[in-house]
Image 1 (cartoon, helix red, strand yellow):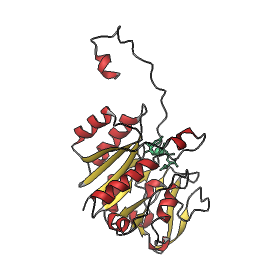
Image 2 (spheres, helix red, strand yellow):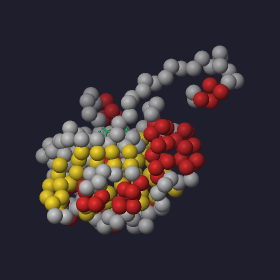
Image 3 (cartoon, helix red, strand yellow):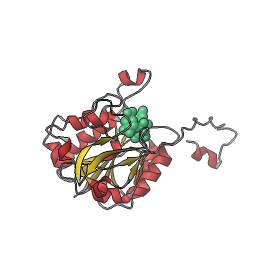
Image 4 (cartoon, helix red, strand yellow):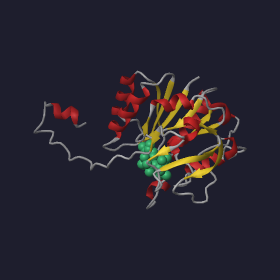
Length: 244
Ligand code: UGA
Ligand code: MN
């Protein structure tokens, strides 16, 4: 059964390096179908080139963030339009398997993807480098779920990180209204609540009863956009191709 990996991404100096790292992780995993969805109006050529070179099965889609959210100062609903586009693709094209929302800047152990495949409804596992606790995870006692450990509970029913859960395609298809809200900080909770009826007691606990970290919420330092190239001065040199 295919494993659908839904990855939001957007144009910035770090985009190609992030996607390169992630692609090279996924190239070590069998039967992955990568849905790469850009927060842009048109696909980025360098991303298309990278995807083609990987040999992975992929879709390259676009889903721009609605203008109303872009203008706002402060927290924006990052990656939400992209992930909802991914869900739309799954509803239109997939019939079985599992999907996972995997941001382009996180770090994934390839062991995670084999664990995820076993998901029947919704599975969860620990995510490292996350919140002020340095960790976000279900709490497990005697093999049973007893609560959540997360540095930002915020009254959420499912205080988990985007990188910490996966859902079966069939389970999603039985819930035609499930989607992710444009609500910064509450994307995961809102999406998981939209999968009702589903309760925390039904969570499938992966990564050896949530005792291993196989995903990390890493963040790459932002780089300033680079200065423009003097195209006359460097005509007919490698710099023209490098800086396009
Ligand atoms: C955290 C969560 O892990 C995200 O899932 C959540 O969407 C985000 O917070 C949020 O609530 O805003 P964080 O590392 O802070 O993630 O955010 P980013 O990694 O900057 O963005 C999350 C994903 O959305 C990435 O895959 C990124 O490429 C994409 N993104 C970000 C866009 O598509 N457009 C943007 O303008 C910004
Ligand atoms: Mn991130």
